[in-house]
Image (cartoon, rainbow, N blue to C red):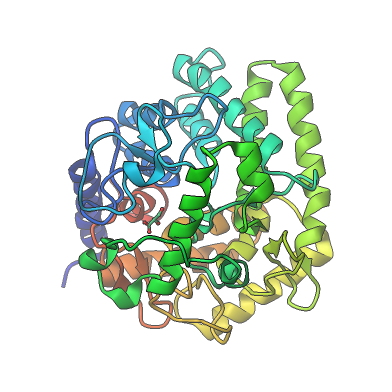
Length: 429
Ligand code: DGY
């Protein structure tokens, strides 16, 4: 039998190999074939994996991502640096007219959090040139969110496409997507289902609505004000909101180090606004924060893994935090592997279908970090232990069944490898 440290060293080697193999020179694809371009939040997480063995390459991942920032500040969710026929919708489907070519929507803003982390690993020197070069770009991307994606002016984050949330087919979006008509969508050929088991992916009816939303934005030339005002899909995402609050705190730390006082004041005010705003997402019956529809005002009323990012964001009253912990403890008793993306027993729960139940290690890492910072170390250790056990049992899959630990979606997955290296390995090197 192989001893644990030895087994972990082999897993470390495999994880580094995955990152090197998925490296396309300056950026990393999440999974060749299935996702052959640069994805926004994937890249930010991947940088943390590179940071464990190649700091230069870690910085480069973010620099390449930010090289695709739009003039208005948005960081697109996909950068199409090279052609690849194996993915739909490709650059022509988005027709954003940018260089590098890109999609017309964004993704969870984890970049500032990762830049702060890399800068700290490098010694937290305020004169660090790579941090200083990225700082104004990060600030522009946060201001883009504040300007175009906060229609209630209460510090929360609105999305105009479910793909922006990163939790593509979460049941949280079902009601809002039901209003999106796919009647005029021209026939298209999906590519994702030729790479992975169709049971692991969104359904065809869902996919048609995703495409309808792209056609909607494209028809408006991706004008951020028009899309935000008119999109048939307008939802405040609890996950994006929590990640944004955290990102503002991390950007604030950089602004303080640079002694950029106007920005320090601006970000402090933003964080305070968001802290108050989160009460609009609180669901007293369930004892968690939930996403909420902006068209009809209805809460999603579902317990998802994103509901537990409040600790990472540093928000919530003591009473709310106690309820969140109760909920998480109840989930811990109900599944062998935390944290399911949708609580078992919810409508549309499916342990293997993408964001309708499976465990994703990047979300686990954010939740565990928040719990640790809040002093809830027992639950944080349980989550990290479960993440570790999933990789040991199944390998570096895109996501995992919370019931059996089965690996699902794509294998040899970049961000899962990165989370192993950054957060989970216990091997002494
Ligand atoms: C996909 O193609 O499934 C991606 O998640 C979109 O970003």
